[in-house]
Image (cartoon, rainbow, N blue to C red; front, side, top):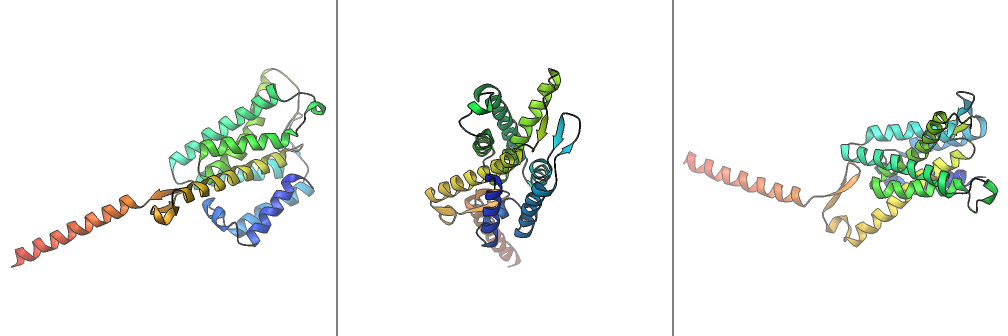
Length: 244
């Protein structure tokens, strides 16, 4: 069983145990939707072969179509332009980094590679996605999007240079790469986010609340509420004097 499938099974177990509810809420997903997506990926990996688009281009349902549909959904659900912008920028940069490492860093001969690139790429995508994306949702979008965009870059360069090399979106181990990238990105975001929150004294101490994919301060809201209350009280006193 591949690492990607093991990760999916692990995530499914966490969901059934109720331990992933907070993360899913931040991704705007519920338990049932997450389980359905996981089952769809697992079953399509087993039963659905790559779909040929052209002679040199194919797509994989588990490694490309389902993840692409998921990140499009999450992108639409993002409620702030800032979060969407970060997700797009992080995905583009992650895609460029993956392509650069593939093209200029890792040996071209697979036998000379000390580490399986299908694990190197998602680690790079996940780190880049969190550093730039920041929120859990933006990191997840950028992690998966970076892997997909790296294949797009490769296809464009092959087309420009008339290189007949095949491009398999999500195929040939790409499903693992895509899945691991998304999980790693969210995992880093969750660990770092929780650590920062604890170092700051927790959301209760800082009067923070979770809104639109981010922790935001409620101090200003409370001050404004107190100010409005005082203004209303003063207005009421003035009205009472006028009546007398």
